[in-house]
Image (cartoon, rainbow, N blue to C red):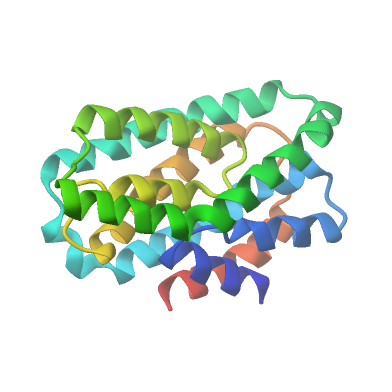
Length: 211
Protein backbone atom coordinates (compact mmCIF):
# COMPACT_ATOMS: atom_id res chain seq x y z
CA UNK A 1 0.00 0.00 0.00
CA UNK A 2 2.80 2.41 0.84
CA UNK A 3 4.49 1.49 -2.45
CA UNK A 4 1.35 2.54 -4.34
CA UNK A 5 1.30 5.88 -2.51
CA UNK A 6 5.02 6.48 -3.09
CA UNK A 7 4.67 5.71 -6.80
CA UNK A 8 1.75 8.11 -7.20
CA UNK A 9 3.42 10.92 -5.29
CA UNK A 10 6.68 10.60 -7.22
CA UNK A 11 4.85 10.48 -10.55
CA UNK A 12 3.16 13.86 -10.27
CA UNK A 13 5.63 15.73 -8.10
CA UNK A 14 8.14 14.05 -5.87
CA UNK A 15 8.95 13.31 -2.24
CA UNK A 16 7.34 9.89 -2.09
CA UNK A 17 10.25 8.37 -0.20
CA UNK A 18 9.59 10.76 2.66
CA UNK A 19 6.77 8.27 3.24
CA UNK A 20 8.55 5.12 2.04
CA UNK A 21 11.86 5.61 3.89
CA UNK A 22 10.44 5.69 7.45
CA UNK A 23 8.23 2.68 6.62
CA UNK A 24 11.33 0.70 5.61
CA UNK A 25 12.96 1.83 8.85
CA UNK A 26 9.88 0.66 10.78
CA UNK A 27 10.22 -2.74 9.06
CA UNK A 28 13.55 -3.06 10.89
CA UNK A 29 16.03 -2.12 8.16
CA UNK A 30 19.16 -0.11 9.09
CA UNK A 31 19.05 3.43 7.71
CA UNK A 32 21.62 2.89 4.97
CA UNK A 33 19.89 -0.34 3.85
CA UNK A 34 16.47 1.34 3.88
CA UNK A 35 17.94 4.14 1.75
CA UNK A 36 19.49 1.77 -0.80
CA UNK A 37 16.40 -0.46 -0.86
CA UNK A 38 14.30 2.59 -1.64
CA UNK A 39 16.28 3.12 -4.85
CA UNK A 40 15.18 -0.28 -6.11
CA UNK A 41 11.63 0.14 -4.81
CA UNK A 42 10.96 3.34 -6.81
CA UNK A 43 12.25 2.04 -10.16
CA UNK A 44 8.97 0.47 -11.42
CA UNK A 45 7.06 3.64 -10.55
CA UNK A 46 9.51 5.76 -12.53
CA UNK A 47 9.09 3.48 -15.55
CA UNK A 48 5.29 3.19 -15.43
CA UNK A 49 4.74 6.90 -14.78
CA UNK A 50 6.98 7.76 -17.74
CA UNK A 51 4.89 5.37 -19.83
CA UNK A 52 1.72 7.01 -18.58
CA UNK A 53 2.99 10.41 -19.80
CA UNK A 54 4.18 8.98 -23.15
CA UNK A 55 1.85 11.11 -25.31
CA UNK A 56 3.84 14.20 -24.27
CA UNK A 57 7.13 12.77 -25.53
CA UNK A 58 6.96 14.63 -28.84
CA UNK A 59 6.78 18.04 -27.19
CA UNK A 60 10.19 17.76 -25.49
CA UNK A 61 13.03 19.45 -27.43
CA UNK A 62 15.66 16.87 -28.42
CA UNK A 63 18.62 18.49 -26.58
CA UNK A 64 16.80 17.90 -23.29
CA UNK A 65 17.15 14.15 -23.73
CA UNK A 66 20.89 14.56 -23.12
CA UNK A 67 19.93 15.19 -19.48
CA UNK A 68 19.23 11.46 -19.22
CA UNK A 69 22.96 10.75 -19.70
CA UNK A 70 23.94 13.35 -17.09
CA UNK A 71 21.37 11.90 -14.69
CA UNK A 72 22.89 8.43 -15.04
CA UNK A 73 26.37 9.82 -14.44
CA UNK A 74 25.28 11.69 -11.33
CA UNK A 75 23.36 8.71 -9.98
CA UNK A 76 26.44 6.50 -10.32
CA UNK A 77 28.64 9.04 -8.52
CA UNK A 78 26.11 9.38 -5.70
CA UNK A 79 25.90 5.61 -5.30
CA UNK A 80 29.69 5.33 -5.16
CA UNK A 81 29.71 7.94 -2.39
CA UNK A 82 27.05 5.93 -0.54
CA UNK A 83 29.23 2.81 -0.77
CA UNK A 84 32.08 4.75 0.84
CA UNK A 85 29.87 5.80 3.76
CA UNK A 86 29.90 3.52 6.81
CA UNK A 87 26.62 2.46 8.39
CA UNK A 88 27.34 4.51 11.52
CA UNK A 89 28.27 7.58 9.49
CA UNK A 90 25.01 7.36 7.55
CA UNK A 91 23.05 7.04 10.80
CA UNK A 92 24.53 10.38 11.82
CA UNK A 93 23.93 12.07 8.47
CA UNK A 94 20.41 10.84 7.69
CA UNK A 95 18.47 13.17 10.05
CA UNK A 96 19.96 16.17 8.23
CA UNK A 97 19.19 14.63 4.83
CA UNK A 98 15.57 14.08 5.88
CA UNK A 99 15.41 17.66 7.20
CA UNK A 100 16.60 18.98 3.83
CA UNK A 101 14.02 16.85 2.00
CA UNK A 102 11.20 18.03 4.29
CA UNK A 103 12.26 21.66 3.78
CA UNK A 104 12.13 21.11 0.01
CA UNK A 105 8.68 19.57 0.38
CA UNK A 106 7.46 22.52 2.45
CA UNK A 107 8.87 25.34 0.32
CA UNK A 108 8.63 23.81 -3.17
CA UNK A 109 5.16 25.24 -3.96
CA UNK A 110 6.33 28.74 -3.04
CA UNK A 111 9.52 28.36 -5.07
CA UNK A 112 7.61 27.03 -8.07
CA UNK A 113 5.16 29.95 -8.01
CA UNK A 114 8.08 32.38 -7.80
CA UNK A 115 9.88 30.68 -10.69
CA UNK A 116 6.71 30.74 -12.80
CA UNK A 117 6.20 34.47 -12.15
CA UNK A 118 9.83 35.15 -13.06
CA UNK A 119 9.47 32.98 -16.15
CA UNK A 120 6.37 34.82 -17.36
CA UNK A 121 7.38 38.36 -16.37
CA UNK A 122 10.97 38.35 -17.60
CA UNK A 123 10.76 35.50 -20.12
CA UNK A 124 13.64 33.94 -18.20
CA UNK A 125 14.77 30.59 -19.61
CA UNK A 126 17.74 28.75 -18.16
CA UNK A 127 20.44 27.81 -20.65
CA UNK A 128 21.02 24.10 -21.41
CA UNK A 129 24.40 24.37 -19.67
CA UNK A 130 22.84 25.56 -16.40
CA UNK A 131 20.10 22.94 -16.54
CA UNK A 132 22.71 20.25 -17.26
CA UNK A 133 24.86 21.38 -14.32
CA UNK A 134 21.82 21.31 -12.04
CA UNK A 135 20.98 17.84 -13.36
CA UNK A 136 24.45 16.52 -12.58
CA UNK A 137 24.46 17.94 -9.04
CA UNK A 138 20.91 16.92 -8.15
CA UNK A 139 21.23 13.42 -9.61
CA UNK A 140 24.40 12.91 -7.55
CA UNK A 141 22.33 13.79 -4.48
CA UNK A 142 19.62 11.41 -5.74
CA UNK A 143 22.13 8.58 -6.07
CA UNK A 144 23.19 9.15 -2.47
CA UNK A 145 19.81 9.83 -0.80
CA UNK A 146 17.32 11.36 -3.21
CA UNK A 147 14.19 12.43 -1.33
CA UNK A 148 13.15 15.75 -2.87
CA UNK A 149 14.83 15.07 -6.22
CA UNK A 150 11.54 15.56 -8.07
CA UNK A 151 10.82 18.90 -6.40
CA UNK A 152 14.14 20.36 -7.43
CA UNK A 153 13.94 19.18 -11.03
CA UNK A 154 10.37 20.42 -11.49
CA UNK A 155 11.47 23.84 -10.24
CA UNK A 156 14.41 23.86 -12.67
CA UNK A 157 12.23 22.65 -15.56
CA UNK A 158 9.82 25.47 -14.76
CA UNK A 159 12.47 27.80 -16.20
CA UNK A 160 13.05 25.69 -19.29
CA UNK A 161 11.52 25.56 -22.77
CA UNK A 162 9.25 22.67 -21.82
CA UNK A 163 5.70 23.76 -22.71
CA UNK A 164 3.56 22.23 -19.91
CA UNK A 165 3.79 20.64 -16.46
CA UNK A 166 3.06 17.27 -18.11
CA UNK A 167 6.15 17.54 -20.32
CA UNK A 168 8.16 18.51 -17.23
CA UNK A 169 6.85 15.50 -15.30
CA UNK A 170 7.63 13.17 -18.19
CA UNK A 171 11.23 14.41 -18.43
CA UNK A 172 11.55 14.31 -14.64
CA UNK A 173 10.46 10.67 -14.64
CA UNK A 174 12.83 9.82 -17.51
CA UNK A 175 15.86 11.34 -15.78
CA UNK A 176 14.69 9.77 -12.53
CA UNK A 177 14.65 6.36 -14.20
CA UNK A 178 18.18 6.87 -15.52
CA UNK A 179 19.39 7.99 -12.08
CA UNK A 180 17.85 5.00 -10.31
CA UNK A 181 19.12 2.47 -12.88
CA UNK A 182 22.67 3.79 -12.55
CA UNK A 183 22.41 3.80 -8.76
CA UNK A 184 21.15 0.21 -8.63
CA UNK A 185 23.91 -0.92 -11.02
CA UNK A 186 26.55 0.45 -8.65
CA UNK A 187 24.88 -0.92 -5.50
CA UNK A 188 24.09 -4.35 -6.98
CA UNK A 189 27.33 -6.06 -5.84
CA UNK A 190 26.86 -4.80 -2.27
CA UNK A 191 24.59 -6.11 0.48
CA UNK A 192 22.85 -2.77 0.91
CA UNK A 193 19.61 -3.62 -0.95
CA UNK A 194 17.04 -5.72 0.89
CA UNK A 195 15.38 -7.50 -2.03
CA UNK A 196 12.46 -8.88 0.00
CA UNK A 197 11.09 -5.57 1.25
CA UNK A 198 12.24 -3.77 -1.89
CA UNK A 199 10.27 -6.10 -4.17
CA UNK A 200 7.07 -5.78 -2.12
CA UNK A 201 7.25 -1.99 -2.21
CA UNK A 202 8.33 -2.00 -5.88
CA UNK A 203 5.20 -3.89 -6.97
CA UNK A 204 2.96 -1.26 -5.39
CA UNK A 205 5.19 1.49 -6.71
CA UNK A 206 4.72 0.38 -10.29
CA UNK A 207 0.94 0.44 -9.85
CA UNK A 208 0.91 3.86 -8.18
CA UNK A 209 3.26 5.38 -10.75
CA UNK A 210 1.04 4.44 -13.66
CA UNK A 211 -2.26 5.36 -12.00
